[in-house]
Length: 288
Image (cartoon, rainbow, N blue to C red; front, top):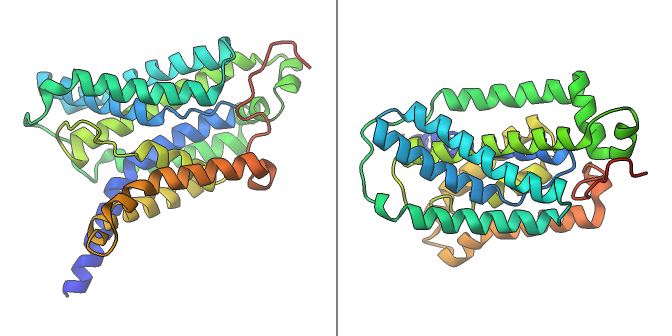
């Protein structure tokens, strides 16, 4: 009976923690399908977590906190989009800067909010959990069975060809990156409103890097991302139990190690993994 309870508890925690991971991953997959990689997921998630907690604490409405968090994540993503799409700066550098900016800003603004109770919270297994599964299925249908999906994938694969057909490459990429930010902001909100209803500096704990790794290991497929999110949710939970046998420092390095391996894999053999051909490559309108 005790073993059964332990397994059930692990499954429940995997689903709970897999929810924000899935939301963030689906957003990142959409952005990368358009050809833009955003390494700022961690920064957008932490800003969303802080915004959600502050708004929910002030209004007593966690749903309002969720909406504001999504907006904050979207706004942060638009900053990355402007730098990487309009200014055509290095996408990797811009994303890393966004993560550092988000972590620093959230740490600064959130100092006065640590230790404050949140009276009204969202349940761990909530509508967001089921909505995440619904979004995954919806994105799969959009990607592979709609005109919009063809346009999105064309922009990520052959932006010049899409441009020649009259597609506004920059607009498609802006929309995809903004959607990714909205999803990351909502993922952060889940952490501070449901999974751990409180605000703590650095509470995302490298989860944004896991999101990036899953997007790659899932071969940019929304349905595969569901399995990846649940798996990493379980590993995240089990890592606390493993501290008795494995050094905590090694466990903390896992998110970054997986991300480095994933990025190295895409750099060494993108086509074999099914990566968008133009991923990480700026595009100038009219360029051939």
